[in-house]
Amino acid sequence: MKKAHEFEILVACEESQAVCKAFRTRGFTAYSCDTQDCSGGHPEWHLKMDVFEAIKLKKWDAGIFFPPCTYLTLSANKWYKDQPKRKSGALVGEERRKARLEAINFFMNLYDCEIPKIAIENPIGVMSTVFRKPDQIIQPWQFGHGETKATCLWLKGLPNILPTDIIEPIIIKHKNGKTDSLTHFMTRNLCRVERSELRSKTFPGIASAMAEQWGDFLLNNQ
Image 1: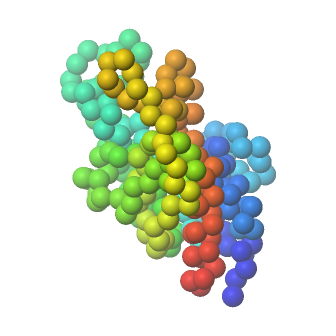
Image 2: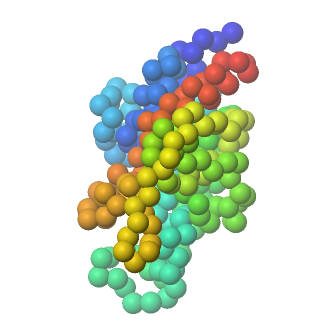
């Protein structure tokens, strides 16, 4: 039977290396992959390249993917209607609809790739209707972080992950009655790029749960 270090794990669209490092801590041979440099401190574990080229490099045992959610989420649906261009330069109308179609195809190509065990993470969005509903929706407060951020997981050959440390989430209440998560509130004044990068990072508790539970699954189901 294979030992942990003999399993090859590809963690793609992940410059933070949070999940990659969690699997490495468990003894698995994991690599992060992104078209930009990693910020996790271990460039020796990082494949700076297109994810589909990385998939071809070797026979991976599992692939954990975090595709960009900009054009898959439902939060900016109003910008898909035909309208004048925005001062920010963000896409609108036909250009944004085209970008969404490309994002959907990217997601599906990841799901349909040759890796036998796959997990794809994304917020609640269009994939629930154009593909299928996610296998599960998790929250950071189920894994020791006082945050609310509904995160969908589409799984192939991997089990649902179970909560490890359920705590009370922190909810920011505004004067107008609206509510916000702590991360959204703390990053609200950052530029769009910085805000997006910080909000997309995987919480350490979730990364650890993925590595522990999916790692054990791989070891016990050879």
